[in-house]
Length: 259
Image 1: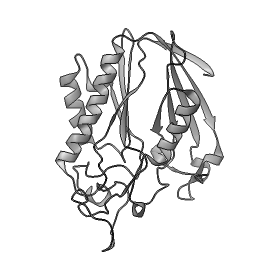
Image 2 (image 1 turned 60 degrees about the vertical axis):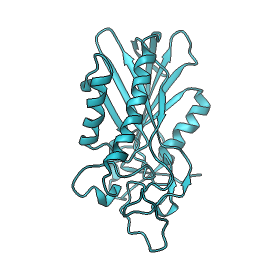
Image 3 (image 1 turned 120 degrees about the horizontal axis):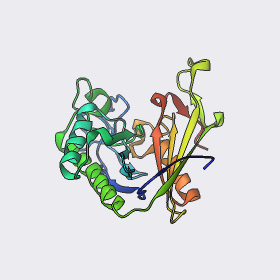
Image 4 (image 1 turned 90 degrees about the vertical axis):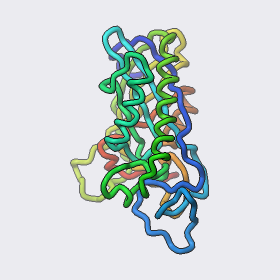
């Protein structure tokens, strides 16, 4: 923590839930025209079926409260959040968490291109996430709601917390995705740390950075949080706390070399 910025009450360690993403489900993010020999599955309508699991897709929830405000921040291993999917989750949370309002919700996706598909009920969505399947979207929403409810319940008995932030830049971590942004590209990384006053080892780190989740291609058949999850995993080891990668600036920067 480089700059002390505020004190918030009731930090809880992020709680997560596994998204509905069985092997065989198609991924979202790449337009696909699979070959005749590509893997197939009942959960892959017109895209290739997944065959390998690297990271089990998950939802993580962080719930913060002060005397005058509250914030529920949820990060998911998904390509994005469509407004109808946001409404599906928000409607449930307003019903199932006492006193909760959708105005207190940030529902985010890390923009992995190797997360589960079938989640957008929108025109042309089938070209990037495969055909919409209401049951799949509903079961993914179930997991998100589960994580949120765990977080809200855990926050009831949580201690006060400190929060600090830093702004960083590291040009070696990325490339310009389209080689045209030039001086207008935003390669800054914002890091926010929330730490339990009573137990400094109990912390949550939010990393806000523009990095596309495209290490793996659709042909890899991989279920994964891709580059954003790799950042989370590395920081979880070094900080011994929970980490949420929050996509920034439209994911306009490509990840650097995986090494």
